[in-house]
Image (tube, rainbow, N blue to C red; front, side, top):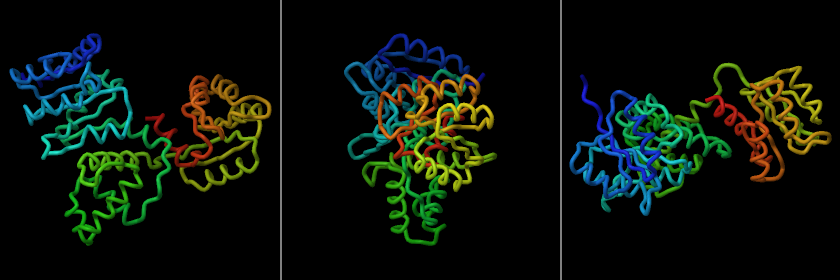
Length: 347
């Protein structure tokens, strides 16, 4: 019988500790050697047990999960420390993977959203990725970050460099493959950090982790199979025409239909049955929330993205309540943004 992987859980909430313990034990390949509520208790466990994996809540009573994780790694460098949290933040991702050896600050190995630890199979997959790649960042964090981001188009050289980065090549290997100087590669990578909107210090290895996974994720969201058919419900003629032209010019979309009233939008959705619809909140006859509800009553599988000229948290909340998959302000309403929210919903 194979040896079970010893796991330490650190969470100051009893109910969550018990829930994670059940998930870990259900893998059949892991065993919980400690479920504690503080960093001090975690240190005692690591001092007496050969822990291989630590699952650490980001927010503990009076201390930060990343600090606890680094304490444990300094005691046991072979340990794999994964932070879990409900928070989705690229700034947090950079903090988790940041490594400052001269200050005794090792980088942690994982960033996982709490809601995704409900599956024992997924937990095993995450641990496998950590062993294979050295790190894991929850794809939902990246999807959230890039969902509304307006990314600049990459140059051919940046595309080539990005592909090699995603394959795990070092800067020297990339320079050799591209037949350019190492300095040129460093300049290309700095440009990629800017275009992928990854902040941080130039020498921070945590940024490289995020860049690699961002490239892999966005590459996986490139169009495959059938393009998306879409309906545009927008009463302003100029905006409707501009949006339809942009969608028709993008090969990821097909059969772009348009109408200027809510009732016509409901009828056209029923007749054409598109994959998705963009529905303006302010329409001359019905508000967009009502249009969305009525469409989804007939076609619950449709993906509806609501739009408005106003950036409003209230509108965003009401959009989700109506059944929309996303709310996009009109200044962020690009074909790329629409495609990403539709694909992220599918995945």
